[in-house]
Length: 309
Image 1 (cartoon, rainbow, N blue to C red):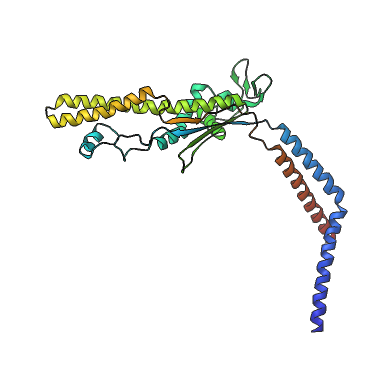
Image 2 (tube, rainbow, N blue to C red):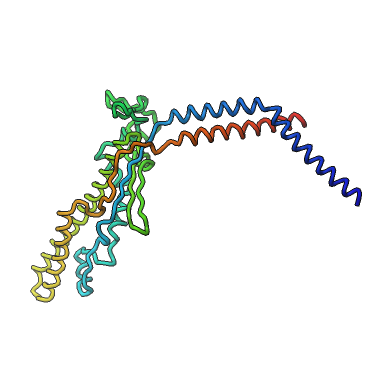
């Protein structure tokens, strides 16, 4: 029993000595730790300063309508489907469809092309607040000659492709819907707060126009088809049903022509942000300080125990 107690005391003494030895090793390498931590901190500060400000512009939208289709009586269902008329309960919800179109490569590629956003997202490296001017990377794009100077390997070309630009644009673009309130939040980030605000507004206009034109074309084709069928039949009941379908599609045409905010209504419009969204420079500096401290302590301990062995 006495031997066991003595062994336990020796183990405790050994642990205490090891702990003291650990602190002694850290204290012996305190200058290395201090210098390394300071170097990492300075590097983190310079890195944080070198990062350009990125601003965010956000718009809140409310769905303008619940369903893309019109509720049609059961007796007209088969005929309506044949004419290409959306049937209530079977059509895709207008808001959900608009959100998927808004995030699609086809829509974003067309939006980028129409607004000529290649330089803004593929060559910009910052923003000159005093002159409200984008800072362009001269190694990527020559502003005087309008020439792309990127050095890339095949199949890529000096001028960025639509697919490359879409991938870059998606890093600055976000859209989501609150499941409880159905409100839609659309945001655009960029070096220029003015450009971010403009693009957020243009995206709302573009998706409303896209959906409006889709349903307008569909309704007009449906009316054209139904008019042909009316001329081909002499049955009074059938003609009555066809006229009812035309009436429903005429309502769709009317709404498409008079309502600019066809799918989304603006609740809270985008504004030019006065505060940057990122980078979080203070956090970068803190992380640099902590990383330098941990790595330097680890290096001192590894060196100490290696020399001891």
